[in-house]
Image 1: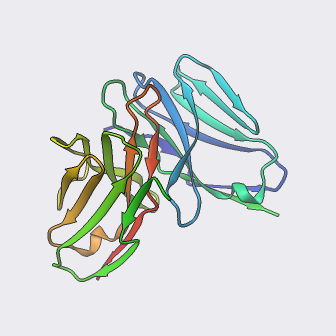
Image 2: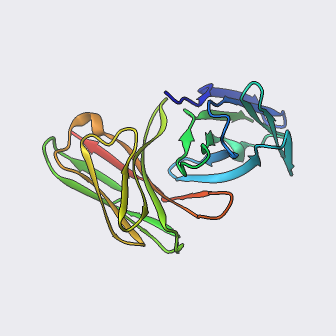
Image 3: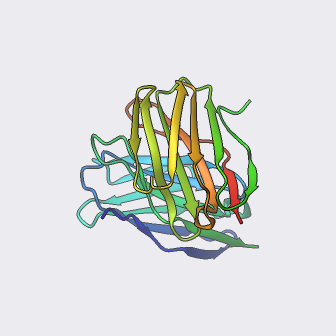
Length: 111
Length: 113
């Protein structure tokens, strides 16, 4: 089946960088996404990367894409306590308009 | 006002009861989705709809049904609730533009006792 895999937990100290990793399965996915879920809320799009890009930077966020290994990562620089949340990666295989979400990584930022 | 709303936000029901979760959106999107979230399993797609006349099963549709009453409304029903349907349920919409970003409602926490 189709599985998007992530580690379940990550703990970092405030001010450090966080790196959340994801492996996906469908090389046809045109876009790959990172969503953030804060407690008691739905998911919100954090950033996305087009499949023909290797890297995308958006303020404190850096997305790296390795298409050969089907590996996606999200780096958060200078992690703050407000970054504590669950982060989901997702792919949308070409032509399906259906998302496949990873299991989510719970990021805990320690003060 | 929120673009995607879900009612109720919390519900406790008993095994065997029929329950309906409702979703409304003001974004004007054609595509709507229902997901359930379980700890450690991420989001799994239950049903999705690309317009009022187009309803499709997702990966875990057994025990669920949906109704797309209008472009803006997409309801999820549990015909006979069972305890393993206890979960957090999300409705989402998607634009048909190039990035296909999804917009999520706040979720409904359903407990089946």
